[in-house]
Length: 86
Image (cartoon, rainbow, N blue to C red; front, side, top):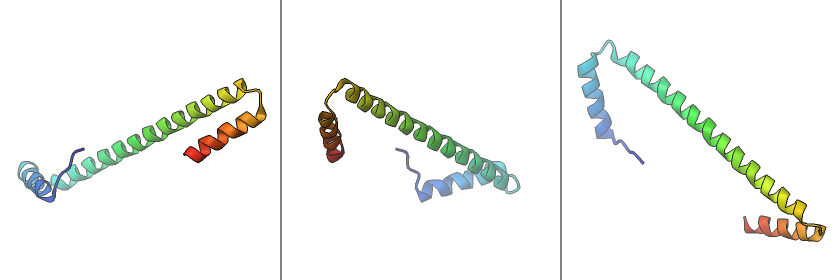
């Protein structure tokens, strides 16, 4: 997606050091680290929620197909093919 190499990081740090100065740079770096951590945490939470929603939809689909099927052997066969295909 978006990669930053070592040379780009060094260039960014040198520019930040020149612009911010040595006394403010550590504080700014800590704040950036916190923001990145919060963003990663939020992304992880959203991914987990999406996965839960997809699993719930799949479960509803399977339950609906089983409710429409009157033959218990047909239900067993469908579940067997679903699990063998996965």
